[in-house]
Length: 321
Image 1 (cartoon, rainbow, N blue to C red):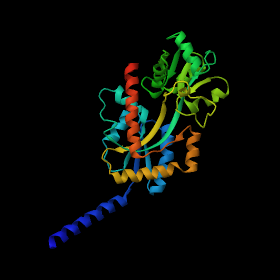
Image 2: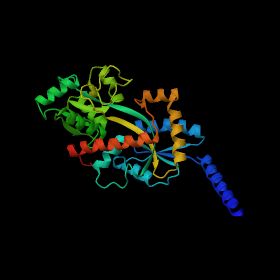
Image 3: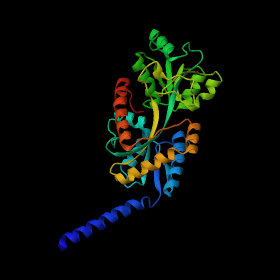
Image 4: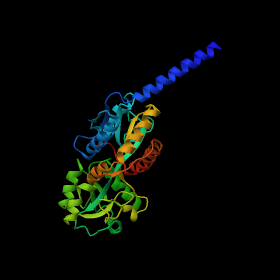
């Protein structure tokens, strides 16, 4: 009877050690890696969330900007980091889904190499047109493009970006051909549509509101599945083309193998932070809609986005820049 007691004592000790280790998290600062340069919308989003979550955990959340290679540098670094809850990744889900199909030899796998934690926010895009374009709605644009295939152009922030493939998805769903013109960023694309050098551009919603109000651009449609609280009077593309959806959806993930207890704790902290009224107001002012999820829901969403974009990448023939 002595042996079972010894085993029981050892087992209890190990359990207590495990619980103590879990309870101690986090013992040091947490790094949140952002795959874009400082000062942009993703950086702002990360810092707002990091501040709230860090305060709740009583630890500092340090935002590390690691731009480059279409977000692949940051993704690769996080995928290869220790799965201990101290390195997290602000993933733009659509971009990572596109990269899975666009880059033939990625050094990581978006499904297998990350542990989903939670969705955090989304931001819509908008298809805008120079006022000289006769079309003022999606239906009118589709009719115009069908009458003159290849005549009209749309600009984006570059080949393979969600903004580019949002236009290709429109071509796909509507059975039309509007020609893509790649730019080295959304700002020059916007400048050229303002100047009338191109007819259309796919850009972030907050960046064009002032020009729409001033009559310098026409809003053709939002790319989100629902109308935005920022622009309730502007119709979505999906209202004319059911099933059309392109959003800049952000999530927080960790390296695969991160303990489930830590993933659950971080998910709860993020959920709590995203319900704070001041955080929601700050994000809405930046053009973000708050979105949260369970780890399982995020995992399913990532897989569905990869499946969706693989078709569009293949049909568009887009290659890495």
